[in-house]
Image (cartoon, rainbow, N blue to C red; front, side, top):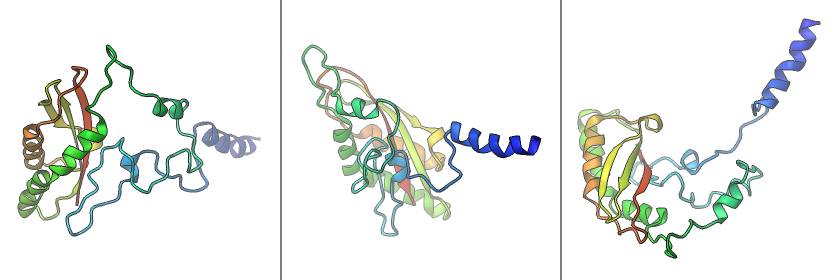
Length: 181
């Protein structure tokens, strides 16, 4: 009797908890789907919420995502006093991509002392309404590369970047991943 209960209960628990004993599921976020850097130094420096090139959206892949995801993605940010924010995540991502050579230089400099250095580094930073980085640090939970030399140098590079002013006079919080391999 106990054996029959186990045979029925285990698959039922896996199903109820969202487990999949069958096959692999596609990645759930753009950060999970981001390609690794190639040997030439080109990296997949994409924000976690940026579109992943040719990757299909979760809904097109047959995965419905979280409840209300499609509605949330289709809605625009609420207007503040009739103004729409012009400093979008796409604008921020493009500015970082245009300036990522400085972060890559930080990584290459540290790699001379630590040849096995590689991984993903996610920098969490806040941009003030005028476009200056007012706070930046390593997102430890989401990073596999935690070298203090690379992190400190990369934060200096990001802090020197001038972002556009917020059209709504608001701070912008960003978690930006760097794939450094």
